[in-house]
Amino acid sequence: MQRVIAVGGDGTVHDVANGLLRVGGGTALGVVPIGSGNDFAKLTGTYRHSIARAVARLVTARSRIFDAGEALGEHFVNSLGFGFGPAVVQLRNRMPGLRGFLSYLVPVVRAFARFQPPRLEVRSAEWTETGYMMMVEVCNGTTAGGDYRFAPAASPADGRLDACLIRRVSLPRFLLALPRVMRGTHTNMREVALFQTRRLTIRCAEAPLLLHLDGELRDSGVHEVTVRVRAKCLNVLVAQ
Image (cartoon, rainbow, N blue to C red):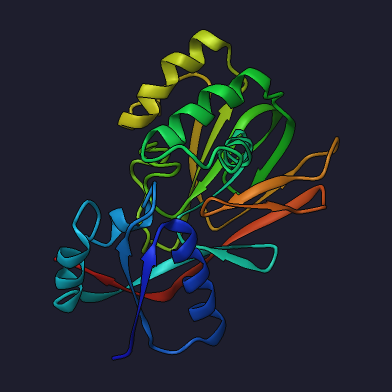
């Protein structure tokens, strides 16, 4: 079995996975995580290992078939987000001096001070809602943005995406929500809705949608984006 190893963060994994999905075939994706968030590596058994140890674990890793998400002709393997998530990514890209967890926490706090929640329409067979929303995070993995467990029950191989919708919140509720999202205990907050789906559409009448795919910023230029799952399409090396 052929193997391709992505050495980097979630952006590198995103690029390599998109290349593999374009050509198809049985090539397996392995990950040696040296980025900031390394969310996808948390699914592969190589997270928080040294480079040498991660490589050693990949030698004996087993292949597992993962799902991927798709939007605007591009795939994502961990998460896609609208609203506050892309705003944080946009600000983080302007702060290259930050490293590690601070590169995620500081932009989150600063972005909140200037963020205006958009009015979004979310439509799927399982859930429909329109209103002012902080964010919609569509997850294949459990975490995004470093250590934020938006979808604690998500599986990358169940044929479904896990959507986390967070409605507009006040500053005190936002500060309360941050540690709860990191622990994955936000699911019963009144501002939060979680649901599984194979396909959903996000629409914003006021402005074109800004989004991220695996932390990579995209200005869609359109007011409506459909997100769908591609079930069991990506061969991934998972260390035991």
